[in-house]
Amino acid sequence: MLSVEDHYETLLSDVYTWLMGGFAQAKQQNIAFFSHRNIKPTGSGIAVDLGAGSGFQSIPLAELGFNVTAIDLSRKLLNQLTSNAKTVDIKTIKDDILNFPHHLSEPCELIICMTDTLTHLKSKSDVLALLQHAFNSLEDNGSLILSFRDLSNELKDTDRFIPLRSDENIIFTCFLEYEAETVKIHDLVHLKTNGTWTLNKSCYRKLRLSVPWVEAELLNIGFELQESSENGGFQTIIAVKKVTAEHER
Ligand SMILES: C[S@@+](CC[C@H](N)C(=O)[O-])C[C@H]1O[C@@H](n2cnc3c(N)ncnc32)[C@H](O)[C@@H]1O
Image 1: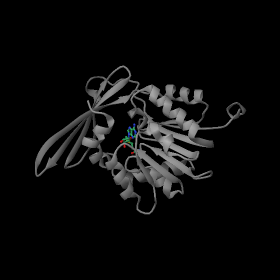
Image 2: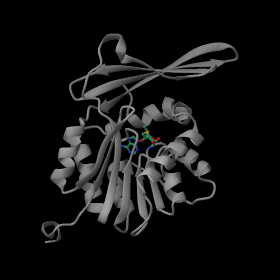
Image 3: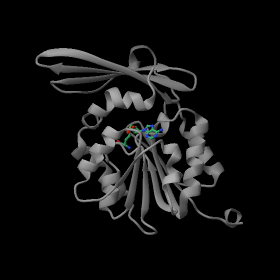
Image 4: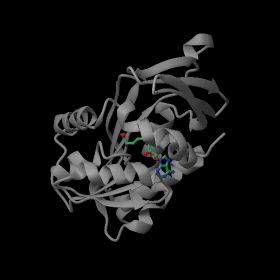
């Protein structure tokens, strides 16, 4: 069993962008995501992308005019982000997302943690710490955008084998092994080199976060829920920091 950081370093970072359909397609999906929700800078313009990967969200946000800080544990993916950025400047920081407040000098308008990064944290108490840090770091009316897979329902038997993507040179399959609070994600990558197939395999854990649990904890912290919707197995939650008299005291 590898840590998340080692799993990305040894296996996933080399194929992640390809796995998500390629940079251009993934970027376009996120441009549509932000445009559909009319997300653009209206306050400080400071945005933080937690688990930014190769920039599928950071780059559209920077192109919308946000001043983006992208944080990730994977140096390889952050290097890809910088080369994908081309016309926009994005500050990249290699660190654990739990440390993100140390990298901020001012409250921010937008914090995002998308495409399952939240479930990569080690425990629900780490998730709670992250949500609380987000609330503390946002300016009034600032938003937190989360997207993640609700893994609370267990797949059984052969349904746990999931073909994710393949082409003539790569076949990426995932196998899920359910535990009480977590799922062991076994990534199996068949790679063809000079006509010969080799198998790279690696395993890490994701948290089984249920949507009602995340919603309840956000409300408990003081967020208002602006959106909670499901699309293609991913839940999107947009939570807004509305400062009430109680929080101001
Ligand atoms: C599934 S990818 C999502 C990347 C990007 N947001 C996207 O939509 O493609 C998860 C990312 O989070 C990063 N990550 C996971 N746990 C992390 C942590 N504790 N601190 C920093 N980055 C983390 C991984 O390196 C990876 O780039």
